[in-house]
Image (tube, rainbow, N blue to C red; front, side):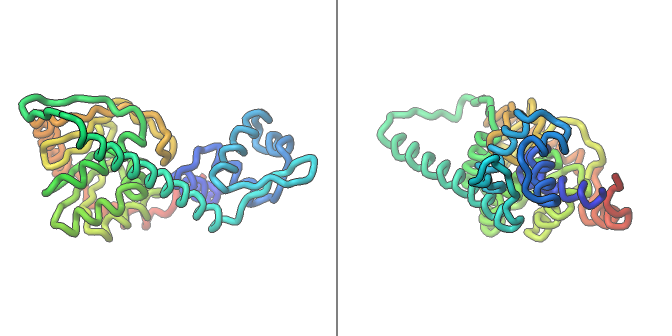
Length: 277
């Protein structure tokens, strides 16, 4: 059971919902099955099984048979994970293309930006947050800091990896605080390997936020994320109000001084071992 729990946690961290992860693991372990048997084994409704199967097929992780009645089989793990990564890459390429199109169109417009007024807007999806943060990372010079939830570290690893690397290569500094738990140790280690400074704050439940060069900030209003997916609904306040950014930066420094270095926390988790189910 412990192995199943860890495997499910990693699948969820990779971008699957809990139901998708459970169904995919079940097919991996027990082989192809029709929806009726899947519903019985997973103790849920057949309609729910069909919805989850459709989503996994779209991700390239499950294949239906050609014969009738239809049975569904899990795609081999490495192939399935590659399919998910390629889908995310395709979505990001599409966003980059749209961004370039908007930039070209904007050159034909007569915009009158002003530094005298602060701008506030609400980002309503994980896709909006990723796009906005990636764009901001390309324009800042010194540092970005953040206090984020454990699952949000999956976003920083999956969607910001190249932008973060380029930012660090040109002399930028990155620091963030999170509650480091066992399923996210590998992701945190990836950040440490990139020379990103990470600290652990046990069971932190306060405000989550990003601050870029102490000028621009993104503050979570509602980010009850269930999985690493661009389609997840969120409510995040974006603003270029410098006074608010300075306030958040001061809050970050206070929490930073109260936090434990990530390496120390990881060492503790390895001594404790994975949680037993």
